[in-house]
Image 1: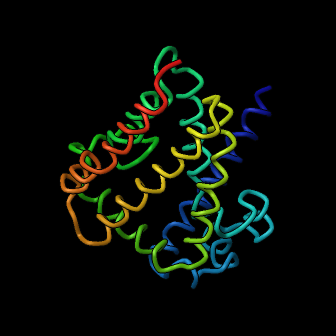
Image 2: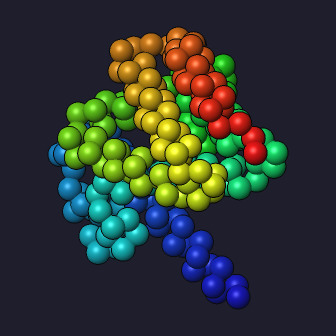
Image 3: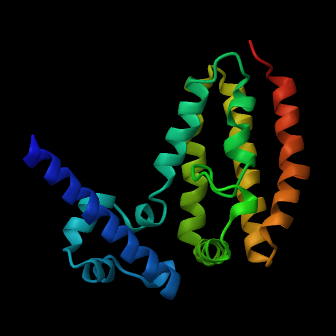
Length: 202
């Protein structure tokens, strides 16, 4: 049992090291200019190891997305009497990151600047923009199952696309967190209000 725990811890450490090295390379050189071989060299592992952990280079960039989907589904499944939209509203509105408990007002400047670099990296890559669209579309079935409403899930995916676009627009145009938060409240908040009216608690 101890050996199994040690093995799992080493696997997690290796995975995190690969992810961290890939992040630094993507930020420095741009996604399209980085190869799996460069990531493997930086992390001191083989290319096969990188592929075993992440599958593809795009999965290195979007390695947080499965945790985000898990958080959305978990909130839906444990919403009690709340509507599906109300259950997700705090995750969607209360900060720039869907899973990180970091309110807009508490964002360290360095984290916002890092997010700006990451957004530019995604914006500059046709491969990443295509994968982003595919990821968001792939969330429709699990959100539909967790909410019990495929129509609601389709509209929520649209709201999540809007959220992504508002956040990235703010990052890329040099907006402050407070300015992006106000756009969220004005545009995204109205969208969620309309969705909540259309799909109230059942």
